[in-house]
Image 1 (cartoon, rainbow, N blue to C red):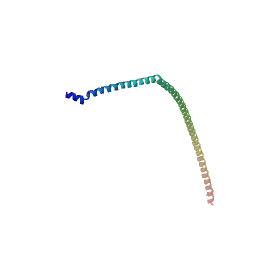
Image 2 (tube, one colour; image 1 turned 30 degrees about the horizontal axis):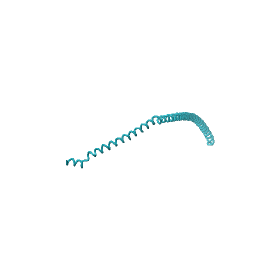
Image 3 (cartoon, rainbow, N blue to C red; image 1 turned 90 degrees about the horizontal axis):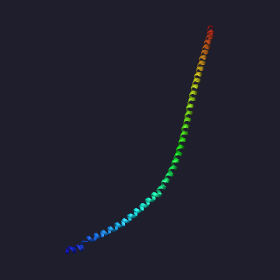
Image 4 (cartoon, rainbow, N blue to C red; image 1 turned 60 degrees about the horizontal axis):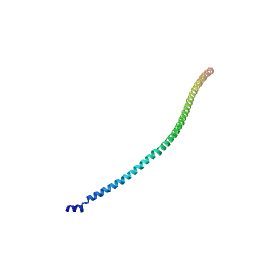
Length: 150
């Protein structure tokens, strides 16, 4: 009896457990409804996305990618034409340089031949002049030898 009085006055476990069960039950019911609403909203959002937004996005992406692909192809063609022109121009410049170099080589060889011919002519003129001077001095010596004998 003292135990019963004691348990009624000081032991509140059965009351607290009942309150806890009531609180958990209410919480789970409200939570279940709230989660059900959240899931329903998610389902509606997914349905709307799949039915309306996704096809629009796919179409916009397809259109934009086609346009970008066309622009890239045009830019690629332009760059290829520019590269071909640059290559042709470089080839023309190289050909001009080679032709100019060949001309200079021919001109140099002609110049060197002319210089050798002129040198040979000058050497021949010098040799003839030296011969004339030798003959002139020899004649002068003979003339002087005539006057020395007097």
